[in-house]
Structures are given as structure tokens and as C-alpha cells.
Length: 167
Image 1 (cartoon, rainbow, N blue to C red):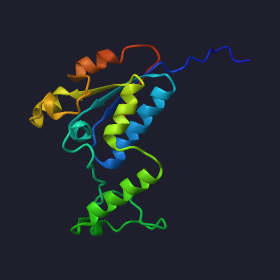
Image 2 (image 1 turned 90 degrees about the vertical axis):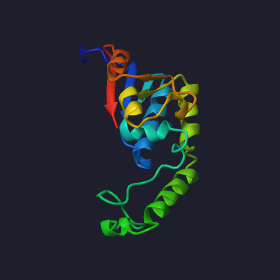
Image 3 (image 1 turned 45 degrees about the horizontal axis):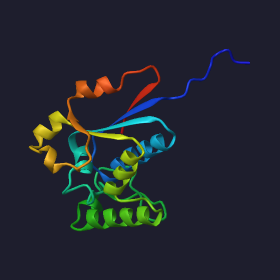
Image 4 (image 1 turned 60 degrees about the vertical axis):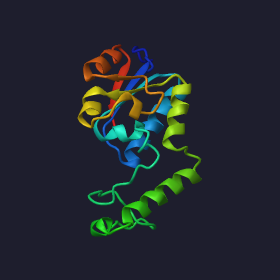
């Protein structure tokens, strides 16, 4: 028998710094899973990740079609990078991704955030990024808990059984 006692995770602090549809949803899925498991959850949006909590952009995120080596066409064939730069391709791919997520009953970003906060998760914006992009608290989703410095966010991450996850 193993003498080490297994200690469950108590808190996750996630940093979302990218605003592409797939990057934001990765953070939202992981945060929602943590909330559902009863884990204290903190989401910190910085740099282009702020698009996920900015009212005018949160439900119209795009999928990066250029420079994305993991991008695949239907059937699994690699997506030719030069196609991603053609007019309308990024919008079409993004629309297709949103449709596939909708088919899987994945909610739009604002509803996903509501599920997370209803379960006790907290959502924060990075003060540096908010200032850099000349945003205000009023530009952000209404249920953002606070605009924090990175130091203030790290204070929330205190504890023995805490993980910081950068998505």
C-alpha cells in the first residue's frame, strides 16, 4: 500500500491570453469542468484573451486560419496555410467551428461564462491589458468580478493544492 496520501486539487487559477475561438473555449471548458468538480475556480483574461470578456467581441470570436499547424480540413487533411489569407475564409471557418460547437450543445461565450459564475467561478480582467487596449470596466462583460493586477491575481492563487494553468 502507498504511504503517500492523495490530496485532491482545491483551486485552479487559469490565465487566458489568446482570443481565438479555440483558445477561449479551451479555458472555458476547463474552468467549467473545475467548477463542476467543486474546485475553486479563478479565470484571468489578459492581452487578446480580453476579447472573451469584452461585450462587443465575446460572441464573435474567430478561429485563426493562418499560421495554425493544427488546422485540418474535413477528412483530416492539413489546411493549406495560404488559403487562410483569402477573403472570407477565416469567417467561414469560424462559422463552421461555432456550428460544430452548437451541435455539441456548447453554449456561446457569454452563456458559458454565466454557467461558470453561477457555479461559483470568478472572472477577472488584467489591469495592464485593459489599460493597454484603452478599455474600461463598462466595456467588459457585466459579471467580471474585478480588474486586477497580475500581483493581485497571484494573491488569489495562494494555497498548497492550487494549480495555475496558462491556456
